[in-house]
Image 1 (tube, rainbow, N blue to C red):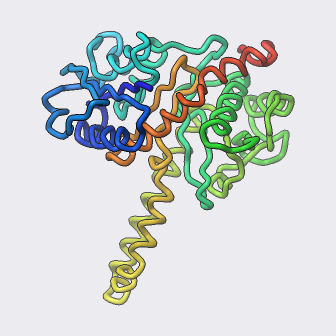
Image 2: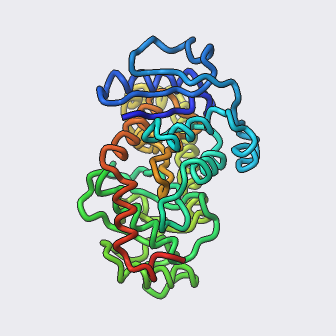
Length: 334
């Protein structure tokens, strides 16, 4: 299995990307990694390994670049070349912690969509109190969506959760402002009608306040709403830890308590860190394209590689394609 990784994308590139790649080849004997980026900078961290090669380029897509324009104009950028490795059949999947919009554009224009999928969806696995996690899609690939698009998201998310996350008969929920069937706007009402007749374990509408309780294994929504939910969860978790730290540092007694409880707090922090589950997968493409968190460290990159390996091993793309072909065309194409 060959994976192409944009070594120059992310806040801590290339060092942390290289560290994650080295851990991956030490852990998994069946992968070969191509690091795409500045060879001199990569070699500052890389310990020579027979299953890690470098594809040299000095061009990089920046976080401030306009995504589509950057992909079209920066043909030799590390992210674009990583996607091109997949398109040329030289890699089975690609990973980047760089510009999210540019990676989505590279996935669409370079790797290409699965036939029958109208719009790919960006989907991270988010934490739950019980530690199981849930898949949320879409979180930003498409701000506007039709009911047919959300049905496709549900199908793709269900397949991924079963084959990669090992969840038998995943529960699919529709994010809404209430649990009643007739709640919501026209999008959610029409989507509800499609989901309840689809070959899915649809559990109905779910509310945002119940997401971290594990109310569903797959939660579908439009990209605008999903992105706000994602950032709200992330922001709330960060704020809570800051408030907790301030409270625990407020007196000598609380500092002593903090010292005793420090391991427990670290465990809690890791539980709430969605990068531990891997990256956000761009579903609906011909091959896996994974967006790692921009601030990824080596462990987060390793998690994204493990996730990508599982997607390739389980041939998730082909399973999605088959599911779309087997579904009623009138229900799938929008």
